[in-house]
Length: 375
Image (cartoon, rainbow, N blue to C red; front, side):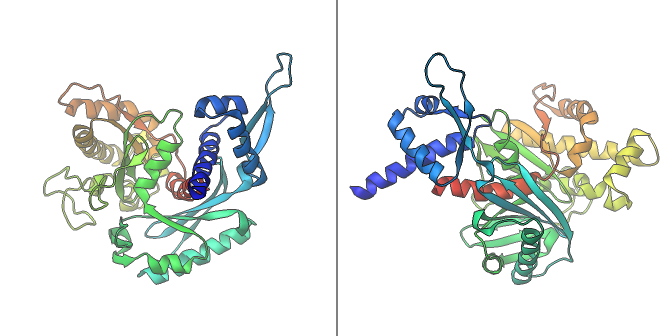
């Protein structure tokens, strides 16, 4: 009976903490009791414990209506921090965030393509330790390190089963985890980008399909905030939708995949220019940029239309290239609408509101979510 009481007490404290964690504004004790349908003494006890842990603070007070003004309580943002690492074929992109998801530090490091989990783990561990030292991060307040992998992760076998841009196949996660002296969490990069998008939306009560346009093209399906992974962890692999039969060769070895037409490489690496240079040329109607953009747009619309037909939900475009898309959003929606069998105007297509570090943010949020769940 005592263990049941203790567990119930812990769950109640977690509910109070979660309510504050998910809010951008402070709440009074009375409001929390009303929202969570708990008694004031129960909420008071949870708040006392959270305060002793340094996780909350008084932000201000409500205006008095004659009695003692009620305290407004919120998260103490820097009580804990988390690190997120995005792994790509040639870069580690690292950020530190606090409990309020505010970015505290960021860094990008170029690396040579790692072969094998043990070497990759050592490389990540070295760069994380350097990042911690450079930014004077207190290891005692660090919740852990979330790592975004550009490939398919099988949780049952604890392996990266396939990561074509990293040349990793059936690679155990154990050696990577063992090399890093902090709690370590792993996730697919596109899934984590989608999770960060959903988590930080002003209203996150709907389902979305997140299409990640990076050097690889992937995606995520979030149903009321929960990632749908599929039977083998391969859901949301939108980059391998066939948009052009017998078309351009993809890194997966097949032809005509969306990734072969709509990765950032198509607009930068393949042309030996930066994305900034490509969109500057497009805006100026110079060189081959308009022709390449039209081809990019045609195949992007085919991919979006397929996602919409299969899932019938909002499609959010994310990734590093999306910061250039706002002037072209009407054009993208028009191309998509022309393919829609049900006469949509294409307004279901939107752009991610996170233009920078979405994947790293999602990776760091893995640490915060674990902490909130197990506090």
